[in-house]
Length: 316
Image (cartoon, rainbow, N blue to C red; front, side):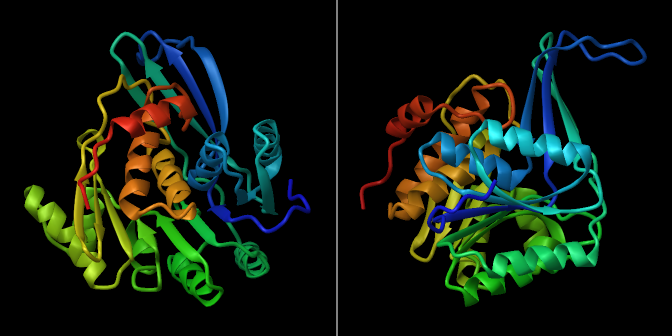
């Protein structure tokens, strides 16, 4: 619930949240009833994951989300259990449920992600009105747009944040991302495929990866562009050039929410005044720490700190 505390430094936004159910089974086979164990429920969706990781790492955030139905009530309970401060914009549709199955016999993951509910024009307008009243230094929007929300919604949000003096971070894909570029965005985090889509060309090697990310920065798309490369690490492009860091070598148990954990780690560093390179390294550490644990985005602070200390940054 929303408390009467002072204005949060970081606000996260999730338009299409989910109840994330993670479980383990020996093998996934057709037709037969598949028994699972170690069921774990999380308040999912990019912004919710980021808010939870920030709290785990010692910084509170206000999670703003749209939710409805009995599943929306369950989502509220999960947020309460984690002590996350939140503001829910109610909708008529039911909040979706996502399923992540870890197959222990092979180590493979199976992820089932519904599209989510229809959001009416009145509902998404209510969200914009709520955001107009929020005071914060950072606004972090993460995740897909539900049906009914216009594809330029994040572009509108970027302009709102710029007008109100907030740093705006966006982690989404496709047209929703394109409409926000060049609107005063602080940070975006595309994959290589998404970066290729944005630039309209294929990226063939490491040199072209770095040049492509830097192209977006110099075109004014965003102040920082992080190119996420999964097990190969990530690239940070900023006005003075490009920094590439490898992913730490860890045992992978679940990749769900790793990108959100990265975003939380980097925003934590930037919001504390760290240099972009150090904040980037903290994001790498948080993302790697998350994949070490089952469930959605559950990095342990001790793991994040240990991995962060292992990352070698170039001498200025």
